[in-house]
Length: 370
View: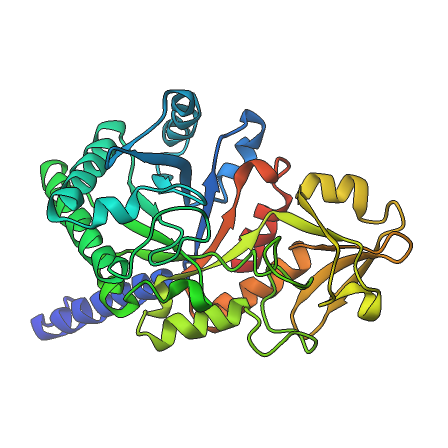
């Protein structure tokens, strides 16, 4: 017996609503796994299935135009070639990085902004990339040795508007969307950005929630802690603090990607109180990639692992040599994935792919989010 026409219409409406709800739930449950990649090793093939977007690091500014250096070309080609292996993979090109200048000068005039935008859009489209990541460290700041100006705050917004317009023009030619992301720090390093004005122009923010302590800070601490330690000073930075700062400025939670570090930072000649945590030090020793931490430090050479339950962060302490190492590991990454899901953020971002050759930390990100 055939159903009446009105019943068929009702059934069709119910089915459409069910499909829409299912699609919305799928979108709501998807978290981006975004990694910066200075190169790609063929042994990382298994890891590729767990990554949504790779951001090649780095292009740079040359006379105001976005270009890729000749010596970087083979590395960029290896990363772009991954799109043939995994068609759903997005590959973006990052311009800038620590000590990379030229931004303040390019953004200072309409002609400069247009040259930046057109060269960037041309590079992205011609190379078959999926967008541009702007890594200006930092507007209004010169700590990295680059030029800066009080006008950077307004000019950065204008620069991104020009870039959005140029990429949209390229998008119309090919019928696809070209994304913009920006790498940003928190605390005082973001006062040169009009966050509310920038938010509608970018697809997401890569929160560099690491390097909170480094060679320029007077004490040790968690360089990528999720929360502020009970021993930390009142102005100490944290992943949660960064998220709260950007949310308060009006950024949608889904546009925020929390940062993970695939490396540790070592401080030597550290005062021994609290097993070296948030103590003055005599020498900043440098950075150690995750494989080296596992091979030479975790459970080796007198180092003892500690866990800060409040900060959700580990550290290593050697009481004999008074050496201190701060880092991310699978446990702290699990805490970050739980935070992302609790606060409905867009996902996690990490620096950087070559520092996790076995994919252990990428696995921890993917498994925590899924």
